[in-house]
Amino acid sequence: MCEWSYSIVDHCCIGREVVFISFSFSDGLLSKFRCNKFQYKLVAMTSLYLAIKLNSKKKVKVASFADLSCDCFSSSDIESMEKTILSALSWEVHPPLPCTFISYMIKLFTPNISLDMDFIRDISIYLIELSVYDYFFVSIDSSSIAIASVLSAIDIH
Image 1: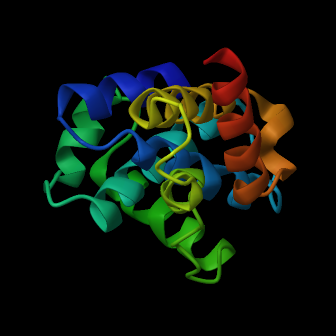
Image 2: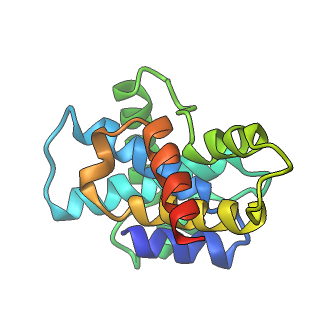
């Protein structure tokens, strides 16, 4: 579902940080409820729909997401799951993003440092995108993920 989510946001020219947000929604719900593979697909699709709806200027219709499910889910299934997710998250739908921390961290570096800051930022963001694939990072704070990605990017540089 992670790869599918990235392909959707790339196709629609939506910021890739939306995938991180959508998985924070999914993880928040799944920390409270168990589900099978079929239900997980609905949770992941609905989380992406909700993340796009809340964090992108592009408007995506719920019917479009129902179509993307290859007739597995209807618009009403997605809308119902949206309510369930919002309730489970207590409407706390703006998680701190590692990308935001990276922006602030990079501003802290002095201009005299002989590092290519664009390279550091790009590699850091790429590492954050990879972290979404690994369940290990679910319980790790966004700030810790950001720090680790920046330090790794500097090490790579």
